[in-house]
Image 1 (cartoon, rainbow, N blue to C red):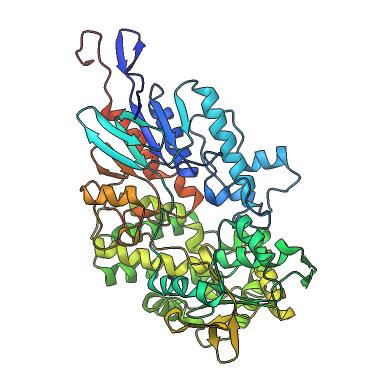
Image 2 (tube, rainbow, N blue to C red):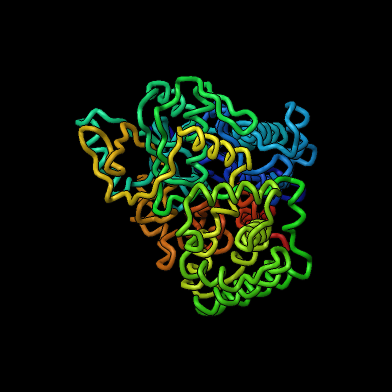
Amino acid sequence: MAHMMLPVSLAGAGGVMPALRVGIIGCGPRGLAAAEHAFASLPGCRIDIFDPSPWPAAGPNFALDEAACCRLNLRASDVDIPTPVLSDHPSFSDWVCQTTAQAVDQYPPRHLLGEYLHSRFCALDVLFPGALTHHQQAVTKAWRDASGWWLATHIGEYGPYDELVLAMGQPLTQPDPTWQRWRAQAAGYGVSLASAYPGHVLQRKAADWAEKTVAIRGLGLAALDVLAVLTLGQGGRFSRGRYIRSGREPAVILPFSLDGMPPLPKPVQALESRFTLTGDETALLGAALAAALDLGPEDALAGVTHALAEPAKRMSGEDPTGWLRVERDKAGAQDSERPPLAVLRDGIDMAAGRKPASVGYCIGQIWRKFQPELRRIFLASDGPAETRAAILGFDRGLKRMTYGPPLSSAELMLALADDGLVRLAVADDPKIKLTAQGWVLNKHTHAQVMIDAVLPPPRLDVIDDPLIRAFMSEGFLREDEATGGVDVDDAGRAAEGLAVLGRLTEGRSIAADSIHDCFGVMTRNWARGIARATKPVHASGGPDA
């Protein structure tokens, strides 16, 4: 197998500066961020990126061929990601204005963000000619010797690298027992299993599902993308609050979850200021979180919810104590006795300003706007792992509002329900039986298609990626026992010369699924760390004073 070597050094004034050699495995937004921050901190480094995608930096979530009906859950103006070295490159919102007819207060298709990120990768390649190489290959093996890290693909071996970064997004994951059972049975019964993503693949498959009953496992943001693909993606139209059928839709669509509750939409732009914390409120909530992370789990949650109470009361005019107590004990249980469609209608009316925001809705928006501070403070803490896990669980519970969809996506779901095309369902996966007639969700409903719209948990014990498994077996990656993610420091470092960035670090990080976290503090800490560790060397071999 051929060995492909990297340059050893760069000539510099007064001596020789070792050219730090970096290998980045995976190049979605986080891989791009790692490369940008590395060049910003250490302009003389050499970076090899390994990703089979033809569009480095876009990643699968923002692939350039993604279905146009799959949209960001952020307005273009809210995508605020730094450009550490590309000072002349436009922001995403400016780029949208320059290249499309869309307004910055709209929620653009996800592929547009992919096009923008890919343009940044291309600009980086121009700015650092010869220093950035994209290998359109998947890494199958990695090992370390005295010279550094080595990587193998189906083409050859690459290295050695001083630093290796795993920025793989969501690695291959073992299907859960229920999905494994269904997959084993599906072929024999002549029914169909599908994944929510890529959306453009699902859109093609859905062309064969007209007049079939389709079930969607999960009721998060992915389920809303699936609904759009099964309806708008099949030629349907949404106009003035009504859905107009194309005739190519499924007979009925059944999104289901344990509680049947959909996520609530973000407020319209004109209402955003109502949910903005004052400077003092932000500081008090930040201080409460920092102090809480050094306490035990119960006291920590009590401290954080106490700090949330005052701004929530100011915004809603209601006492939030009872709502917060229930949320701490069981997220979302406040609405467990209400019909899901009633909850959805209320959420739409609150987001549109037709109804006063409830205390729960206000808390969700407060926590959404606090996310940047939450990530920064959480990452800086070295408090008890059990406490970090408790705060992480609280944050996940509130994602039904903090990561809420655009108002138009929620309105589409409601219009589909009013049309009779969608019925929200309550179901427990293990109790759903698969028969020759399809999946039995209740006594009268059989689905011939099942779509998985549940994001796998960021835990090492369910990862099936052979590269990750090999790193684990060799002791380079260790599990955080409290959270199940990778045990890393605040720079993502898991072992000497090996860093992990992304959702597998949840437990040390928090809210890592956001595009903003890709360009956040952990990635910046990693780049600054490798720059500090790299010292100039004189031609004689001695270090600079």
